Length: 171
Image 1: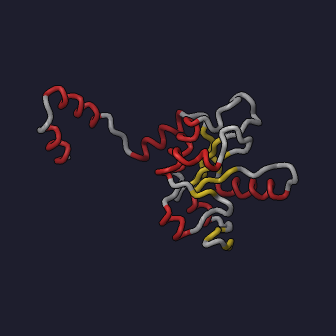
Image 2 (image 1 turned 135 degrees about the vertical axis):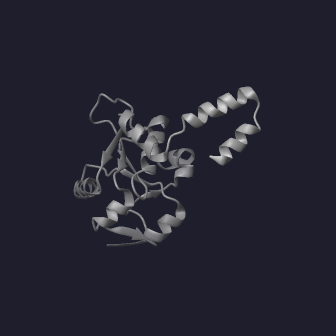
Image 3 (image 1 turned 45 degrees about the vertical axis):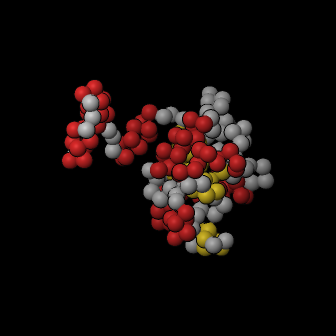
């Protein structure tokens, strides 16, 4: 609060009004995530158990393709805990810039994004939707979707599912 007061004191009168208005409208991170969840209907949500079942079903099928799975955690988080097997590691800070290198917008497969606890992945999913992933033919139930993994990697590990670390898959 003191820092905001000091910044405000250095501004012109018109800038003070603009600054004060922006401070009054600031949101917390959890509030922003909840707002996106409530308003963006192009983002879908699934549990770690649902993702595990989906990956298992598509692995057993000769025709169904598994979803793309993107880990948006920072590199140090990935190194510490590993990833969901087969995940593409695209940290949140470079997701928008680099996602097209790995997944074409015309790809027919769903995209699942996850982070540590299921919050940053909502922001990542929103970015993917804004880039055009998962919104083509929205009325068609078979069109690809963008999913955010509830509980993130913590939920995946808590459920005892396999983790890939240093090229090795283990529980």
